[in-house]
Image 1 (tube, rainbow, N blue to C red):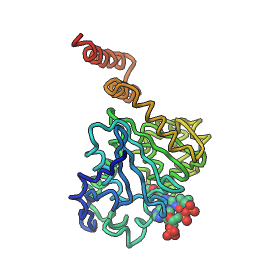
Image 2 (image 1 turned 90 degrees about the horizontal axis):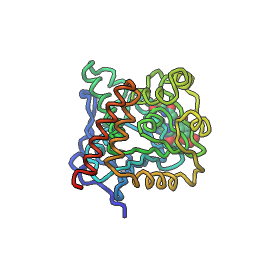
Image 3 (image 1 turned 30 degrees about the vertical axis):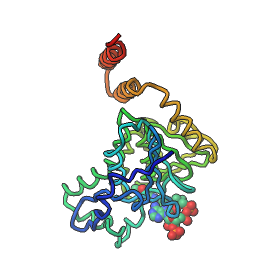
Image 4 (image 1 turned 45 degrees about the horizontal axis):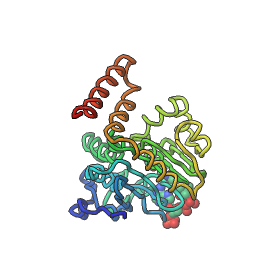
Length: 284
Ligand code: ACO
């Protein structure tokens, strides 16, 4: 039975505040920022739950995501990120571009007035909401239907794996709006599709559908819309069938592989395997 995990969040409920003279947004309770967080055994599910606004995201969304990462129960091994309604996420809340901004969170105009250090800290805080999804001891899966635009695309890219519905439309819209993608999405995008294709996709802001996403490696699996949740559950079950320590060590090795020489990677394999075999056979 799924349990709603609100425990560690309550003390932060009133902490979202006006940013006109500050750079940071403290984490609010998930429901207050349009998120749902549920834990069912070893699987945690984060649902973007503002379907009437196509799950548009704010700085408060990212602070709450970061808090979920910090307070993730130890037993969780798989984290699913999904969106309620027709779209996974239409990206950043466009009110950020207006003079009024998002109530309690300011606007890009107020952010522009921050000094360099404050600006840096504010973006770093937003990025924290995405970076924990790469932790080696968990596997993160984005279940993506409909539009995944800008911050929505980057949230999907922040996950280890992407399962998409046949109506998916990935679009990196930031450059078309005068911005850069800064929610940790540029590296996974370039790593997955290559720098030339990433340049073409980002600078044209074109949409990438399910067939192309599969072909480019942006999705591990594409299924019919009505099969998305089941496909993700099946994938999670298959991942959970593998020993946790072995899965963690293997993910750690694979993540580091592109940045290492063959010799260094071989040495890392030896070290991980020695630890594994000792752990498995120490007592026998
Ligand atoms: N921010 C705030 N509100 C949004 C956003 C958004 N990013 N996207 C959609 N909404 C709201 C709409 O204003 C509308 O609200 P209303 O019913 O009160 O008028 C509601 O969500 C539904 O939107 P529609 O446009 O009617 O939905 P539709 O399914 O036809 O289109 C689509 C979906 C294509 C995603 C469209 O809403 C859209 O283009 N949104 C903006 C996408 C965008 O430019 N995002 C920023 C990317 S850059 C970044 O993320 C850093």
